Image (cartoon, rainbow, N blue to C red; front, top):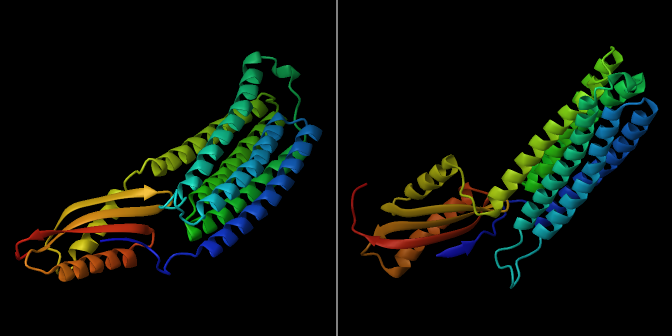
Length: 307
């Protein structure tokens, strides 16, 4: 027996779209404002770290646009060419986001590295107090964006939105690095501003790798974690008419889970009775695991035994 899940215990596509769009618009406005403020502060206060941080914030705007496009494509209804839906488009959006994030970080890192190895520290300008204040404001703002986006990403179970949340967190970390670097430069160590930019690159690279890995796992039909599979196994075997489980396979499709299970039932049961058992197993999985979208239950004959 094979069914696609259509129950009401998951968020509707309309609510999904509405929430994702609202969060994305708010973060776009916030990032635009932050990138302009940080860029101006970096120029006025002579801080390369702050200018690098401004570029990072500007990349967030582009990444959020990518997220919006990915979420809208992923929410499309299944059609003849895509009978299983379009959930993987979210993964594509997350992969694009990871690549953009890494390219942004490389540009920042290379510029900082060149400043450090040049050895001309005396020629480096000392950042002004405005850069220090802007870095502090950026940390608070980006951390707030992270928690805001993360909350709604978990609420609607959106991988792309969660990737965007981590992009905000990486920007908060980069602002921490900028703050330390600017403070160090103002204390008489001009190279610290460039060192801060290099640290920012490390955080950006780490975030891009994690986003890319998570998206790729979902793209290549990676199985669920062992704990989730054990919970599904226990759910199936708890049915008194299931005498054993011959096969249990799971795969992650976008942000959803697909389950294939072969169960043993008494060989003397009629086809109708076997069908009812399969249907009960399907409904139990559907009820207990909201992320499961598709379930296939196959019944194999077995002799009646005491489990």
